[in-house]
Structures are given as C-alpha cells and as structure tokens.
Image (tube, rainbow, N blue to C red; front, side, top):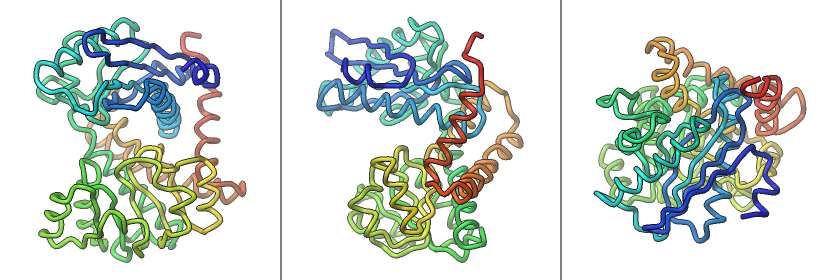
Length: 353
C-alpha cells in the first residue's frame, strides 16, 4: 500500500479498519480543486487490502474527471469498504458496519461525501446519514434524491445519440442496432429508453434469470460470452469495467462504444487501439455522469426537473465536443476528454484559496 500511495497523484488517502469484522475502509480523495470531494461507496471483497486501495484510487480519479467534464462544483473521491469475505453483510451486521463507516466519514469533517455504488444503495445512505450529514442520494422518503440509475441511463442515451451523430451522421436511433451489456439498474432502464426510441435492441447479462426475462419480453438476447463479438452498430457496456482491452478490441464488430459502466478501458492505450480501428468511443466518465447530476443537482443545487433534464441532455453535447477535439488534435477520445477535464480542474484555484 505504501508504494501505491507514493505513486498516486491524488491528494489524500484516509484508512480505517473495523476491528470487529476485519473490514478495511479507504476514502481516496483525488482532487478538491473544484470543491469538496464526493463519490460512491463500493462494498466488496478484494484479495488484498492493497487491491481495494488501488480500486479506490482509480475510481476517485475518474470522479474528478467526471465532475469536471460536466462542470459540477465537486472534486473527485471514492470510498471502498473492503469486506474480509465475499459474503455481503445483511441485517443488523450490515447496519452496524454502515454506522462504523459513517462515523469514519464524519471524522473527515466534510472532506468527502458519500453516495451509493457497487453493493450499496439509497437505503444504505439513509443508515449512514444517521451518523453523518456527508451523504448524497438518500431515499426520497428520507429527503434525498433516490436512485441515480434512471437518470444515469438518460445521460447514456444522450451520449449514444451524440456518438451516432458523429459516427453515422445521424442521431436517429431507429436506424441503429444497440447491444446493452448488463441489464441492471442503468442497463435495464437504458433498454427501455432505446426501445422507446425504436432502436434495434440486443441485450446480455450474466444473470441467466434476468436474461430469460428479457427474452420473454421479446428482446433479442445473446450469451454474455458472445456480447463483444456480436455484430451491431453500438455496444453499450453497463456492467463491470475493463472489458475493452487488447484481447477484445480486435474482435469487436461495432462502430460505437457508449455505455454506463465505469472504467470500461483496461488501460489508456486501449483508446488508441479503438481509434486505429475506427471505433468511436464515448469516454465513460463523461457519458455516465447523469448520476452525479441527479444526486448533486437535486439535493445540493436544488434544480428543477426541467433544469436537470437540460443538464442530462448536455452530456450529449459534451460527448460530441470530445469527438471533435479528438479529431482536431489527432488523439484518442479518452485523451481528449482527460485534456478537457484537467484543463478545467487546473484552471480552478485550490479549495479554500
């Protein structure tokens, strides 16, 4: 872990260990240049605590880029609750662990505010909020903005339209086939939105029951292992990260990659490989920013639904701007998006200045 911290370009790492369960908790704050850090809370088992720390660092950087890409006044952070076993705690054990985590967040005095992420929910944020005010996306019943997934899907839809306008000269999705990989909260809603737009929809999911249910609705489905080799216009990754890599890119049979998953590229070099293949990639930290606009916009900025809808539509504009900048500068879309976001971060005075 010492080496990870030495090599990281972020601002701070805070560490806490729950003595009762042996659970490690990491809060990684990448930047506070645009404001106090915020980001999701990921709860999962990792082989080593160092793996959990590395995940938090990587995801917190993505949050910095995400906030800057949509010009929202927060810095990037991410928290990881690294469980000692693969079993996800439930009931009273979960509640106690979330209170322990909330007290840890509270001890940081507002440096970082948490929100839901993998294996955490709006209901969990309600529990955490019992011990700290530094929480986004509580349930609506508890005064929060609720589930971010539907609006994340709306932002992804706008991004897909922008990517198609760039790649095909038209954002009319009725002319396109879109494969959605992962039909959970974001992917499931995205499938509905794509069908409303009359797109040709293909779906896949590692959950066989979920996949069967989609097939029963008349949606074309493919096996998970065939997703990246299925011919289509757009692949929309909405599940785990790292699936776009040196092994999968040569097998892709699409013109566009535009989805809601975090960290879709295994390495930055994968964006260059996509560019060489002529595949238009919408950088994930831009296209999936609808969740932060939903939570922060409704709870902190007090936007109306109309303002939020306009901000979500702006994700499409941001994606198209990235394609234009990448072409102009002769670089990958990932590099162009990072350049735009970092310029905004670096142009801001440090927090508190």
